[in-house]
Length: 169
Image (tube, rainbow, N blue to C red; front, side, top):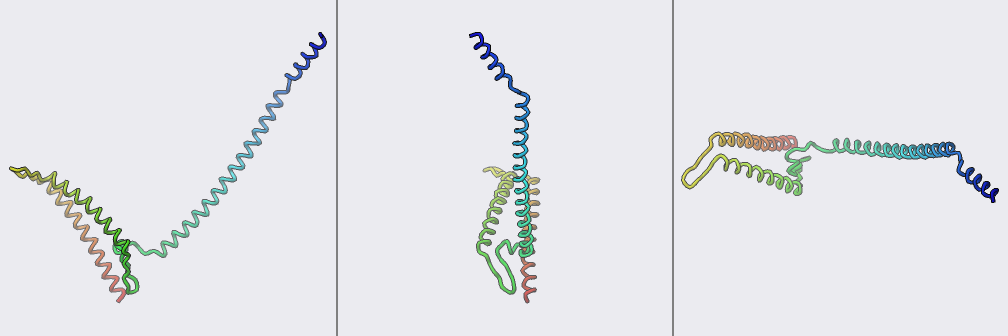
C-alpha cells in the first residue's frame, strides 16, 4: 500500500509539472498569428473598399463634368419653366407650378412679417391712433429695398427675354 501511495503521488506530481512557460509561449505565437491574419484580412477589405470608392468618385466626377457641359445656366426663366431655343418656347408646367408655389410661400412669409411690423408700429384704439415714426420709417426703408430687388429681378427677366428674341431674329 505504501508503494501504491508513493506511485500515485509521483504520478500526480509529474502531471502537475507541465512546462507552463512553453505553453504560454505557444499561446502567444498562436495569438500573434491570428492577429496577423485578421489584420491582413481587414487591410485587404479596406484596400478593396478604398479602390471601390475611388472608382465611384471618378464616375461621379465624370458625370458631373458631363452635366456641366450639357446644362445651361439657371436663369429666372428656367426656374419659371420657360425655355427658349432655336425659335421655340417650351413651357414646363410642373416647373412653373413649383415656382409659383414657392413664390406664394415666400410671399406669405413676407406678408406675415409686414403685418407684424405694422402692428408693432401702429397702435389703434377706439379713441386714439399711435404711430411710432421710427419703426414706421424702418419699415418703409425695408419695403423700399425689397420692392427694388423685386423690380430688378423682373427687369432682368425682361432683358433676358429681349436678348433671346433678338438672338433668334
